[in-house]
Image 1 (cartoon, helix red, strand yellow):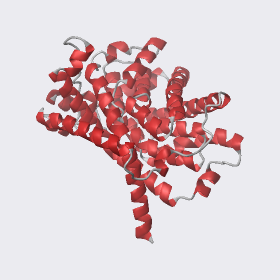
Image 2 (cartoon, rainbow, N blue to C red; image 1 turned 180 degrees about the vertical axis):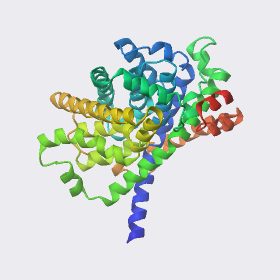
Image 3 (spheres, rainbow, N blue to C red; image 1 turned 45 degrees about the horizontal axis):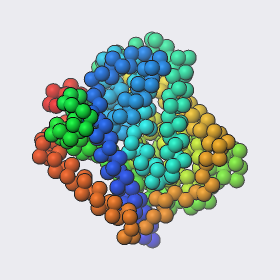
Image 4 (cartoon, helix red, strand yellow; image 1 turned 30 degrees about the vertical axis):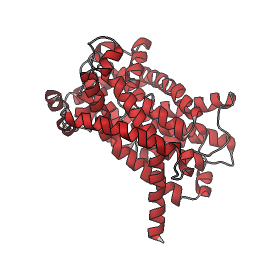
Length: 385
């Protein structure tokens, strides 16, 4: 019985992984192209304060970066240490894990266009709420204490990955830079290193999702998410969504399969969005905040991030409900998928061939050495690059 249950959960996880394989490869490939032509060098200059222009630039730079939560957190500390606004650095963090291409593609395939649109609408709202909370409650002394702690250089995760800047800023038109030898090499390096940064989160998310889909009865989810009380469920979902994320240990794109399970189980539309938003307050990331900025700032970020995530998700829920954009059926494709010879299989084979070519170029151009530096301290990795 135990073996059967375990095999059922593993098979569910495998099927989910097969269903999202080609969107993952496509998303990471597109993200690698963007990163190859967008430089990190100008970030500090472009993020000097918390004015709308700086915050808007933080959103744009975050959307053009890696989706790895750990790399985003490490890079945010790096630019903060170099003089960027703390508020703008946190806005960059949010954008880099909520507005990136690979996340959007996975959400579109697994959950539908309504959730993808809600993510794009909700992330800027979350940032706006966070800026208001920071302006109201963030004291200069706390920022100064956080900067002193950040300057100690305690190591978190993906320090080297965050510091590596292989972008091609010169060399003709955008197309010429992308297709140049340097551009293709940079794309292959970003592609492989982004995969290496998040594969544990993706695998963890798939395993947890498979276990929950196979073992937890629908009645439990329906009771827990108050499905019989629509008004209360609308409020409860955005409140409980981030709390579920905090204890799941899964971040980045790895939490999308789990979001699909929660949606099918009965969590509200806003609850799904709040859950996806909350990848920056999972327990491992909170521990990194403690190392980077100190315990007080880590606690401050937990409270303000949570409030902004829940508030933005509730606003999205109410707005999409008023516009009739909330899906009427709870049938996330990934949970009901099965292995068949269909367009998903063909697309997986095509994009696996693309991944193989990028990996081949990565290995041929010295990528293996850089891969070993991904978790090295930022200064050491930067010298190696």
